[in-house]
Length: 325
Image 1: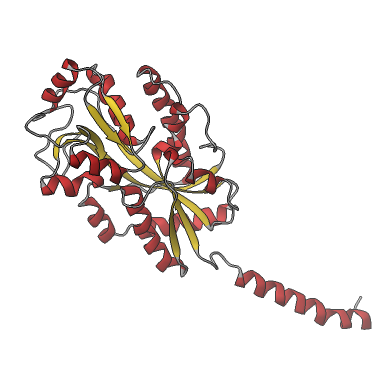
Image 2: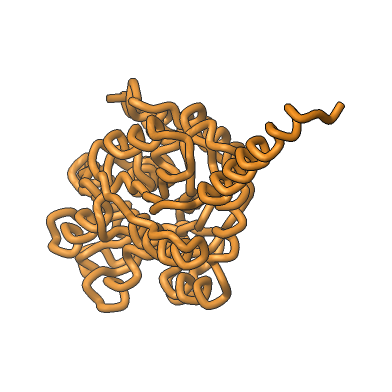
């Protein structure tokens, strides 16, 4: 029933609703800068993808996207910062697969749970891997490298961006498939590992393609074989591992964009759409020049991929006799 009291309250109620509506509009996501925590030093392929995506999303969303490098500990410094961040879409991570999969097998404990602490947004890219050496005269082919490794077990070194990294996993797979024993030398990032491979401090590296491409093209490193089913369009003259005599040795390092667990699905879906749009034909073509394949996906696809690779990598680490640290 409409009365004088109702008529007096109505303007106040409408004012509150109006203010509430304005407040909702003002806090529409995003209304402040977004941070990408990258748990690796600057200069590697993960950092490059994070910065490329960050620039695209900054333009699309109208907010700065800042890349914050927190390298060290094979992801154990940077990843917990994201896991413990507010689930509001303003702290995200561009992560290599290894921090979400292999780390479960190579470390006794982790300060984060790869499956429970994060909400995937999208897979971003795949990076085929390539075996590289400094001394092409000493190791002209994969077969020559295997022969040298069998002649000196545990003496020939290979670099990686850290324990459990794709480069480390590539080395473990190589040892398993060739029945050799190499000496693993971990670094705090792919750029540092590449630099010491170029300097000859280590003998070889199972590198992600974008890290190796410029150095192979310049002649400072030599590619012996690509760890993919077919030859790379970037280096069609380089044989696959299968062609080089090593069967069942394929590995592609993927990356994904993730948020803290319990981030609202509306934010996850919004970011997923913007990520897919960010990898336009021009960006895809530019990345392809470095051997990077765009592979955006749904959050559920990433969750299934993480679960699958945790199991596969655990089997490989166990077969290699690697003792969790």
